[in-house]
Image (cartoon, rainbow, N blue to C red; front, side, top):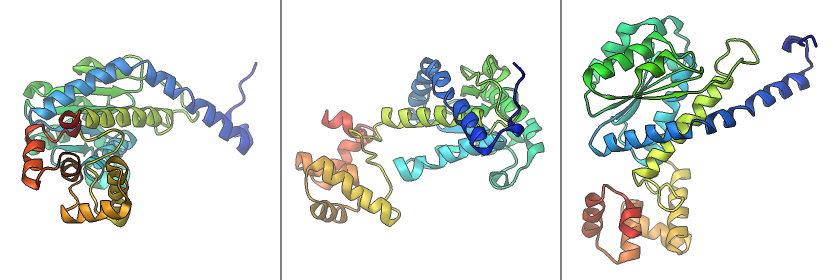
Length: 284
């Protein structure tokens, strides 16, 4: 049967074709869970030893990676100097296409040197094609320095993956609009980075039960979220939770320890420091 090209379809048919295409992605990602697990365990080990997680990407892949990295501070209280993204073309490439930047191996080298990449760090290169020069150079330099390396691509077997210590190759296949890798490839990368960073934060103890206890109360929404989290965990009213948080500088993990174990502020801080801030390890 002759293929009906997408430009010949009605709007409803276009939407259904895109939606059908998107539904393939979760299954493709599921097949790579063991590889994603390897990446998480590697990153967790390095992070606990004082290392940093450094994403490197270009174009849509880089922007997706940058958004993931940026969330680690407000959501989990991670120092932005320890979890960040280097984007080909620099910060302006986040808002304006700088397509030629992805071909610059030298820029990758210089940016990693500027942040003083070392053997304690983890370089995570993200490239839909699996062969973007900027990302390839980032992994090459990472290997030279002795840093751990992870490659995420959207092809069956990638050059990026061959360079990486852990390769997560996601063969998403043809896009509904040929070459538009912000579509299926972008969705696959978003899913994998969500899984990677969230699982890493859980392993690091930034989540207690199902709550993000290191959320930063930097606006009214996040203040209310902190109150709701404490209220649920401590089984107290929102009003009681708000009073406790205000009395303790909105340090949610510390307040939970004070409430659960009847500790002082100093005792709670010392206990958290001893266990790398991992509340689950302390209480369970």
